[in-house]
Amino acid sequence: MKHTPKWYGINVSGYHIREAGSNAIQEAVFTLADATVFIDETLSRGWHIDEIAPQISFFMNAYNNLFEEIAKFRAMRRVWAKILKERYGAKKARSLIFKFHTQTGGSALTAQEPLNNIVRATIHSLAAIIGGTQSLHTDSYDEALGLPTEAAAKLALRTQHIIYHESGVPNVIDPLGGSYYVEWLTDQVEEEIWRYFDRIDKAGGMLAYTEAGIPRREISQTSYQTQLAIERGDIPIVGVNLFKSKIGDFEVCRVKLEQEDAEIDAVKRVKKNRNQKAVEETLGGFRKACQKGVNVTPYAIKAAKANVTNGEMYQVFWDVYGEWPHLD
Amino acid sequence: MRKKSKKTRILLSKVGVDVHDRGLKVIAAALRDAGMEVIYLGASRFQDEIVKSAEEEDVDAIGISSMEGMHHVKIPELMKELREKKIEVPVVCGGIIPMNEANDLKDKHGVYEVFSPGSTLKEIVECFRKCTYS
Image (cartoon, rainbow over all chains, first blue to last red; front, side, top):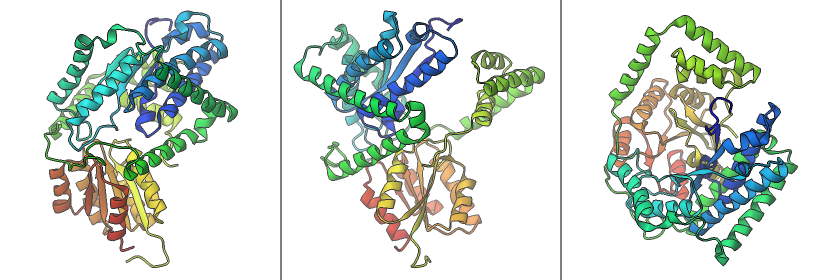
């Protein structure tokens, strides 16, 4: 915050929560609750809420139900502002702003009739833009088949260009504000977010909730129930359980295996030509900072300048903090 | 062959640097609901971890999920290691695996079945039942 005042220090992610199988409410509440953990930790290091809050941003998902997604973004904006004002006593207007990037839902896309995904990604994009997103990533239509081909990636970009330049949609802020249905839905979503929040608070806050493995379990349960509902046909997916279609032959992107060797060689070259003493010193400093639990960023920058690799720094994270167990 | 008194035991894992475990967890839940016992290794596992676990846990079948685009390398390597260790249990794969490569995994490397996106839990559970004679 001191050295890079315009840098967003953290981008709190709800995207992965949604892709892991949560519903819209869980995505919203777990993300906001996660943010409170980061705030609490930063405050405990002596920062003031109005110094840090403006530099927090979010990374959200936009899924199939257009109005529910728009209501989700609108409700999150309200809840975030209230948390900052009421829970943390923020005074600056900028502290209350919910700023978010959106990626369209990858797991909503199908391998069957992949061109249909262009339509889905367009609807997801509209939900994000009408919902007020600051930036947007539109998924490629071949997401369910592999890495994007160049043509698929370009089409994803053009989807944004068409919405931005031709449709007029981004010219209005909160265009559905005042719509009786969207306002009602926003109220509903907000109410559900607060109810869930209360449950987390009663369980001792999001850190305790996470350490007890509850969010993961709840997300897994929702994801299993969703799959069962898809198979019953209760959640229609065109090409999968409605107007069923087989997966056809499709051009997919393949990364050449030699690429892996080239990358390994490049890392080896860097390692061979660097000052080993500087590596040991800076990596040692980085390790000590991790062990002490202080801000590790200055140490990471020093290490990076001495050509310490990402992998070597991650190894320190693993050594010091361990890994979250995959089993639950 | 499996003793009658024992529940069918399925080892579920991902192989390689791959944390996309949503589908695998859903399959774990479905197999449990179908009365099978699931040994869940989860995300980002090395081939030797899977082989070791299959050996120690005396499983009846192995389910491998791959979404990271390295299935055509990692899965044949796993099949080779299993053969070398004489672990002769059926291996069922799923994930983002193109059709022609799915056929290669089956025909050339001895994978029992490959499920593509959109497969139903019913089909997958049925396949595990069939390959473990349960």
